[in-house]
Image (cartoon, rainbow, N blue to C red; front, side, top):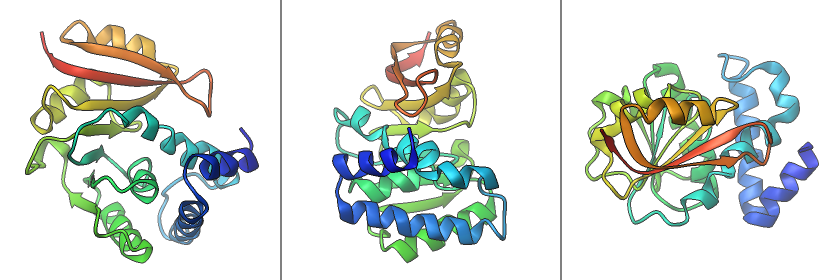
Length: 207
């Protein structure tokens, strides 16, 4: 997917005003990257495809989620949590343990005017105490599936949908997780990288 195709995909699935918000975030991200290593310098050349659409493609997979917040684990530079918060109005909680990333995310939320629906929690996910169970849990390049299920279990219930980009390891990670976890697992192909997969999981519980 080229950068022009990525912008077109965003425009087709959302609208021009949301695309404009993403452009503002791109500028914020580029400026902050001169102060801390948020994403690799080379990936700015493919920012819309590699990071923005790669994050946004999770949104259609959450269409069946019930009411409640989307909790993004280890948001880091803003993907996918901040991208999702810019594109839809569901409440978003970004849980991030690194203070400089937290400060960046909070500043970005304020600059982009989405503080009414996007919150940043400075914590490890194990220490985060949600007021109610999450409707959606996402995590991009954070931990192996069994570790994610274990560390976020207190944030979820039987209705939670898990959306976990896993690259080429998606199928093998699902098989490994089934040794200790049961649920409904599906691997969705990534539209930005056909060799990669997104683990969609429901009704996850220990065996």
